[in-house]
Amino acid sequence: MRYANYVKKISDTLAKYKTDVDTLEGLYRADKQKVQAKADEMKGKWTDEYINQYLSEHSPDKNYKARLQGARAAVEPTVLHYLEMLEKSLDRYFNAPIKPDFANKIMAIKLSGLQLTDLEFKILQDSATSYMECRLLNQLAESRTKTEKKTVLNKQSGEPEYQTVQTANPYINLELPDMENTYNSFKSYLRSAKGLLYSYAGTNAEMSHLLDNDTPNYVAVSMDSYFRNHADEAFSKVMEKANSILPESKIKRELTENDRKFIDTLIDSKYPSLARDRVKALAEADTDIESLLLLDERYNKYLEE
Image 1: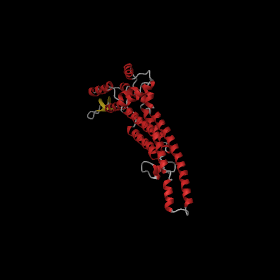
Image 2: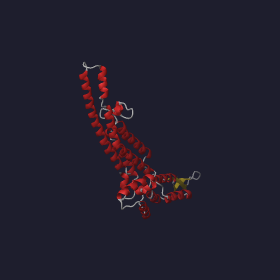
Image 3: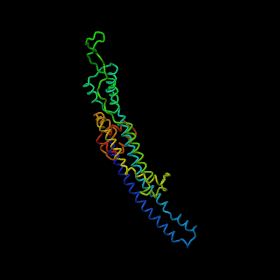
Image 4: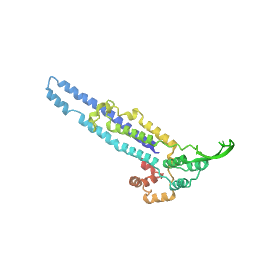
């Protein structure tokens, strides 16, 4: 899956955002201390009412809230875009279509009651190219039986005789990626990334009251868990395991000559800047066309930007 590139883009963007927020927190603390120091000098010289008015009018909160919002606005589209691309990649991986001829073979075998040999089953197994095709094969494997002759003693005569018996075929089912665990891992990764984006307010959470949402200090200070708990590495390990069981390269088919001709009717490669915008527009409008463009080495790079 294309998860590695997306995760790196998200991590790099969030790392820059965290650095910017931590810098803002240091500046905010310094400005707040200056204002407070000035107010302390006024004590005994001015009334408490005047001093409180001074603190209110010179509070750095308004300025730093705008700067915090600006820092977030600069990275938010990038983070959300790659999180969406990551989820789409995951959906494509588990929902890759079943080839009609493959489905027809499975159906014909079931309806006819044909008992496949282990070699025949292995050949069929090697032709499976998607998660759902492997699921169909596992269901077929569970229904397979094995016919064999056994020598038993006749209960009446005590003489040995042959009996034909059917037993479950010991052929091991195909190992499949754990879909539920993979999606749960993605949800955890998503929460961690968005938590940093929307609820982080610096190493000491001194700007938590400036956040758009109502986030307590003790929560805001923990929102850098994306990096502390290595959320990107944890999610990537789950994805690596899934991809090692069923590589995405096996799921994806190659473009046919007709596919390329079809793409050429939609996009003019002679104008790269126009092609880039056209590719993105087509991908957003139609998931089937997007799947073709992802296979085209001329244009797939534009879908990763």
